[in-house]
Length: 309
Image 1 (cartoon, one colour):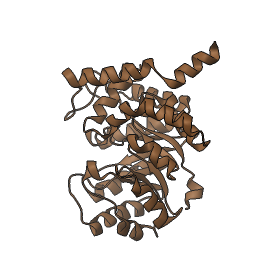
Image 2: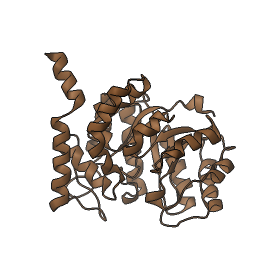
Image 3: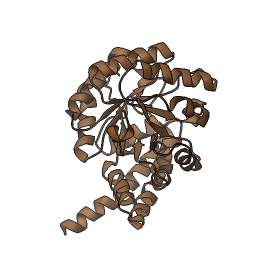
Image 4: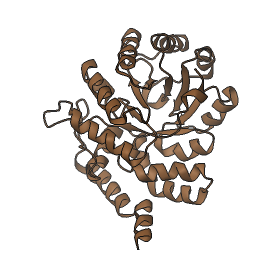
């Protein structure tokens, strides 16, 4: 398996999981969210990542969400399933479940809670990769998961053919250049932290796994297209408009903020499962005002109106 064969690139929103009023997984609503993003023109979906509240769902619920996504995409665009478990055997078992359901790839996180030594981290990823033939994107997010996939670990994993990509969510943008210098095109690099997406894409990332795309998919798609086409003025204008919201992706309450933005834009519900709780008071007011301001000043929306006139 090669990165050319996989060919992942572009905008992959980290799709939300929707809940009903009793906080049961609402599969129909979840699939509507997935279908809407695909209709908007995203290049694929990451489901059951952090924004998809992976660790708040049972294995059975996760499998239902994967089936919904597979049906929504109908084989036209790739579905990548987050793998986020407490233990390595559980992650390997879930990887096998996801492959049986028919998703197109996996985004594998370090084992939750425990902070591994480098050799333990490499062994975790190796065992999950050996449990499946699906292509794998590694997820590096040191601020959130307290461990970094350093280059020594990547060197150990480079010989494993189905490990093909890295979602890079370290806030230090030098990491993109260092990765590409060290490994060339061995791994497809994705930007994974919304408020350094422009920099990551400009420095060689092939795609963007995005949280705020859930609320504003058109602008996300246009931002990436502008960068791909070399229209830096347009890309900077969209990024500048987007930045106050993109900062939300780097906060601990990113899931609640993104789902509130999604609700304000008429694309989903803000309901989350505990231990998360919906935003309240000043924080809710702050995020609401940010989303409403962004909605009133949408650069893509303005362009549509000018075209129509």
